[in-house]
Structures are given as C-alpha cells and as structure tokens.
Amino acid sequence: MAAAQVVVATALVHDGRVLAARRTRPPALAGLWELPGGRVEAGESEAEAVVRECREELGTAVVVGERIATDLRIDAGVLRVHTARLADGAPQPRALEHAGLRWVAAGEVAAVDWVGADRAVVADLVALLG
Ligand code: DCP
Image (cartoon, rainbow, N blue to C red; front, side, top):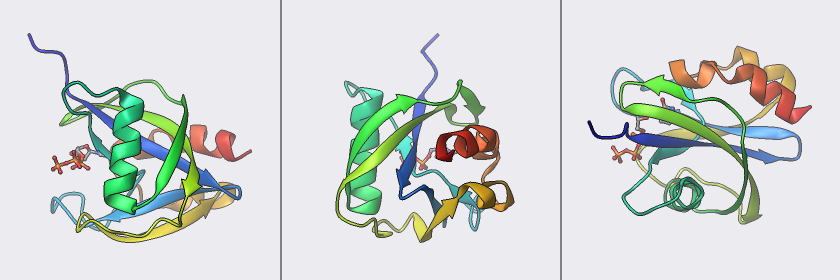
C-alpha cells in the first residue's frame, strides 16, 4: 500500500499572531479558514513544501521552524503543521485558492471558522502564540 499523501500546513507567526487564509475551494471548504499549505510533492521534504506553498500562495519567503502537532487525518491523507516565520515580504493572497488573509491573535484563535482538521490544532496555536 502506498504511504498516505502528506499535506503540510503552515503556522506562520508574526508579531504574536498567526496567519489564517480563507479558502475558495472546494465547495465543502469554501469560506472556511486554514493554515496555508498543500500537498508535499515527490522528492520534496515537508519543510521544502512549506517554503514552496508559502511562496506560491502568499508570495512570501518563510523560515520553517518545528512541527507543532501530531498527524491529523484528512480526506487527502495526513496533515502536518509546521511553524514558520516571515523571512521577507508581507503575505498577499496570490493564488485563486484564497479569498483573504487575516492575522489572528491568541485570544481570537478559537473563534475562527477553521476547516475541520485545522480546528484540531487550535490549542497548539494558542500555546505557540503564548
Ligand atoms: N487541507 C486542510 N488544512 C490545511 C491545508 C489543506 O485540511 N491547512 C486539506 C484541504 C485539501 C487538502 O488538504 O483537501 C489539500 O490541500 P490543498 O488543496 O491546499 O493542496 P494543494 O495546494 O496541493 O492542492 P492542489 O493540488 O489542488 O493545488
């Protein structure tokens, strides 16, 4: 059996807030907020995938930190969250995949309308933001 597809998500932290991105697709996820990311491609490390997805989706360079959560099961496979910080440039919703971005403070994390898998890391995000 093939290994489960790994999807990475980025807990991008800046000035005590974490970046949330509003999905436009698929219909089941449209309007909900996620930690930006996507599928790890063949031959790519998870950290490399985080860097690539942030460049593609947000137009920004990031430095990847540690993995903050256990594996989360999603329809596409398994989701792994990595912390990151900005290396250069303010994130912009570049890809059609996102309708908007917002920086979320620790006290606001629980109230965000997250996609299902990401909701499971709310406590980790609050701890991360301290
Ligand atoms: N996903 C999630 N939470 C995240 C990021 C992704 O639950 N923080 C889920 C949504 C999708 C799957 O993972 O079902 C793949 O995510 P993307 O569609 O963002 O991945 P890609 O950008 O790689 O997709 P595509 O290949 O469609 O461009």
